[in-house]
Length: 368
Image 1 (tube, rainbow, N blue to C red):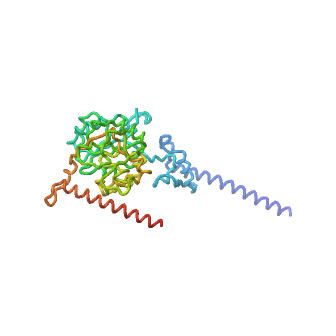
Image 2: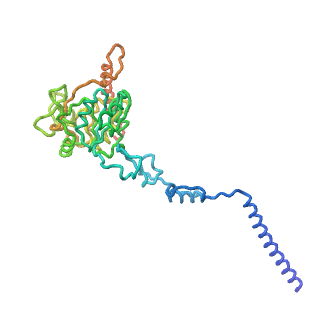
């Protein structure tokens, strides 16, 4: 028995020695293999601190482990669901920014209102007179339908205005593409005006005061009643600050609270609150660029419309009826350019009415 015990102890001692020797050889072999490959030091890759957020770093670590977190925030704006809500900026503005310095110091003043004109260079003097009626509380945005932009720099204000140039387009084409509600969200009121408006009797700051005083979400200045044809609703009244209804020709109004006797302004010089424009923008059709018929439908975007849509009489304008955009048309079949433009205007009015009626019917049948 003693010899057997000694023999077993001897075998265990030999096994342990072999294991130790094998381990040492493995470490030495691994060391020489390791130093035979080029070394890569992560310290040589210089990434500015803050370029990768702590969340990204932790996500990278977890990706290595195979359990990366997935962000999905359903209340984010459409398309931004995969972003953490704290980084989402869903609205913008037309404020000009510097290329240097601290972003927080860029703006000495943030204009509260936006005024847009759709213009051709031939009307520069008229537009210059109009712009002078707007204080520095207004951002100025010009849509150029004739492609002439640089010449406007003769006016000092033009150098800080926003200029958008696309040839032969209407103001509603521009509005649909450049005045998305999330782009103009910084502005309390948005003026979307034609270029042929006389403004001798108009002051924009006083106009805003009256709009706020009377609770108007959609409005326009009164029109000089002795200059050109207008609806009765939009003619200026000399004895009022604001009016919200009128009497039209017999049979023109099925309801005294509906257009054109109430809840109605024309499309030449409308002014929208931020909230009203968010609705109206969605109603502006992508292909119907003249906007005819839109004025009869604006009432759908405010409630009650007969109280929140009105005409400001004490700040009034003159419609000069200059067919400048009509002359941007094309002569076809022996007709003058303006005739083709006018024909399309009328056709678009009919098309818009049909689309609106069809949309109403489709929705009501869906919910009934």
